[in-house]
Image 1 (cartoon, rainbow, N blue to C red):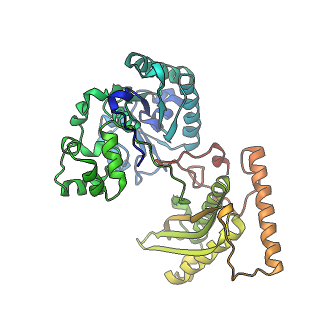
Image 2: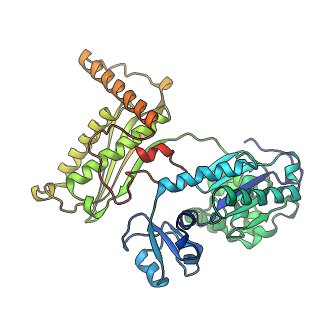
Image 3: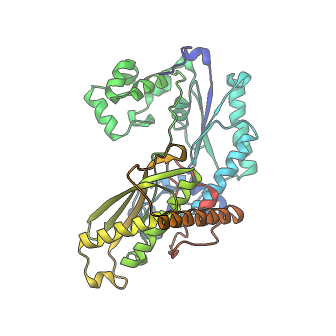
Length: 436
């Protein structure tokens, strides 16, 4: 493992981490001044049966938070204002915030739509200069993006501790964790306040008699490696102690989309069209990354609680026409195995609750090895070439007009307006995904 052997005190204040406060809700307030100062919850769809995906600080004061059921949130906060999520707007603001920040300092890595870090160089590592830089970033965001967009900034000897620092004071905080004062304020935190410790890891720590951050601080790198059951535990120990250990570079292992279906889209045919649409979007992302997939998995959850999942394997593909045929085969398999009645297969009877398509076993073009036992007929080769040419033409139109001009199949009309495009913790969608 590559570890910077310099003591944290020698590196000084090396990293600045920025965390946007109640990001989605703040954007909605910025977009609509009438929402400023009001309790706001952002919903994936406008129904009380769903959960809040974001809450403003005014709503959080009543106990409403991400994951709170809306029917419960309205009891907790009678004046709660619910608004539908608009991922395209959040992505647009994300890029504006990056631009505003880079007027002050280059961004090192974007961790999520509302988190990124910056490497401090030279005189920037002096505390007074780092503090002044953080203030300039906040002002730049207010000036170039909006007064309603606030952030918490952490400054520390590594990016991990800088991120931890952003959670110590919210909203609009600025916390500096000086290397010579560690563990310092870390001892006031709970174990799950540290990035990378989830419920399962907490259970392992408890089994190892580690019940506090102080107890974790007093372990050794080898102990952490044993608890984590991987070298990641050793990295965690060094990060916690202020060493600047590089993060592992990762490449995508799968690309997919899932969707909780709108009530009017839970019938047999409507759900099938949605599944096809999700796959087309996944194919587009696959090509954007110059990758090919060898496996397709389709999953469906029914209203009655049943689950169905199936996988098809094939030579490396990236065009939607070939992959849609494999999805159709999985759909037919599900139809047969689930024993749907003729009544269910017709009309708009609600059957499904959620569907997802997942492309995996990804590979790059240069690593593809054709099956020695596969001999394509000339007509099959010609059809595949046509599919590849048509796909290239579709992508060319997409790049030219920055939105989809030609559709593959039927485009389902959803309440949210975007099919499959959503913002995950570790992935910010490209702007043009919202037009695809």
